[in-house]
Length: 267
Ligand code: AMP
Ligand code: MN
Ligand code: MN
Ligand code: MN
Image: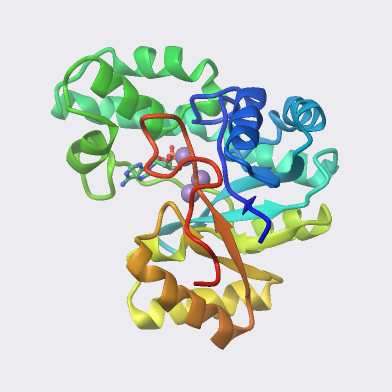
């Protein structure tokens, strides 16, 4: 069966490899089709497309949009989008515009968690205000020795309910799905197992996503534990969603699953 990896990050958002390095790594791992799905941006797609042509790999043009659904942050992946679509571009720009203010609020809360100067440090790692994410704060905390590794930074400081976590309004679900569908793409609910929703909340989210034009959910992802795959495969069948597969790769030594390395969709 062909190896499709439909969720990956590059330095255009919070990944560690450039778009070409990512595509080259995917090719070395025998990936047939790779999606670049950076957070709230399509900036890496041109470089990735050139690298894909060189390596003989198929590039799926993608994006991962940050969404506020009530009080819950969810991620919606768009696959096969037209990166030049004006309404998608404008929508993504509005989401990115919120990142610096949110990071500043995170850094302000840092007075209570004891790491001054880390906004500047995280910004230096991100390379741009528009890319600034919790991942960059996590890398700074790990590099400065404040925590053992980036996962520990989320567990101790950056995860929901921890000292550096601040509430933020991302895109609306209807807007995000609309931008993706309007740009000719397929809207995929990313890592549905990560949102900590109870059965009723989960059903409400899935129904609403479907009604708004969502077509797929991630079943096999580096962000789900393998024991969860069967549950989400059943959910996809129950709601009539296509099932997606992706590593959610961010970087060597940081991500548990390499490009193309997630388990099979059909066991
Ligand atoms: P942001 O969009 O700035 O909130 O950052 C979200 C990114 O942080 C995700 O895409 C992951 O790369 C990373 N992340 C979020 N939660 C965790 C977690 N609990 N453990 C490890 N990485 C996480
Ligand atoms: Mn990320
Ligand atoms: Mn995500
Ligand atoms: Mn992701």
